[in-house]
Figure 1 (tube, rainbow, N blue to C red):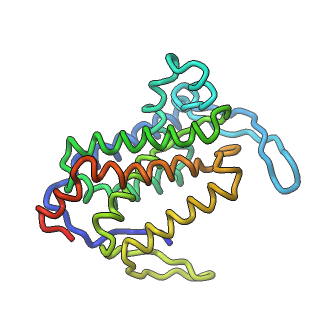
Figure 2 (tube, rainbow, N blue to C red; figure 1 turned 90 degrees about the horizontal axis):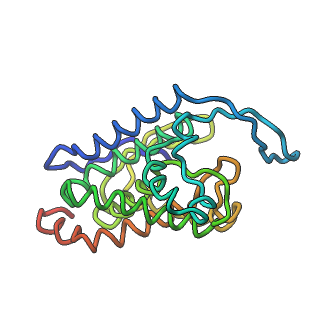
Length: 241
């Protein structure tokens, strides 16, 4: 299921959400234009093979490596923030920015711009911590805004569980659009993260895979921070459901 849009209007233009999306896209374009190919080993069903993978110029210098952060935190701490704006490919950034746009505008509208900035980066920090703690000796670079976006989705699930989401649903070789409540599509996404973190490489983003523990950490952080920042009370005062 791929969410396309929600039917949950906001009272104010989501300027912070738009700025975050713009920064991510601009940094991604710069990253791609300054990159190079590097040989790397990829594990397949038939064994380990060697391939040339394109590494962005910014990714090479600003991605977060858990083992390096643990060994030299004074030299790597800033990568916790820079890695949030880096993405591996077009699908990676497109999916993250789509989810941020659909769910982020309402969370910004509820929390207010300043609180939303704190909320977003705090979710990203907790997501990074969760992934690093799950694989502290990993030398695989961590990049992406998905941990922070997962926090946004967690907050949206609490505030607007019944909001209607227009969703693209593939059925064999056909595609159809359906409207489903937010708790179904976000709940389905969250369930996949928990299952994958348990059964697939213990959540480690092996060879360019997915950092599932970062998603789980960000998701839980989003729910917790929503209450700490008074989001639940603010939504009630504004008359949101």
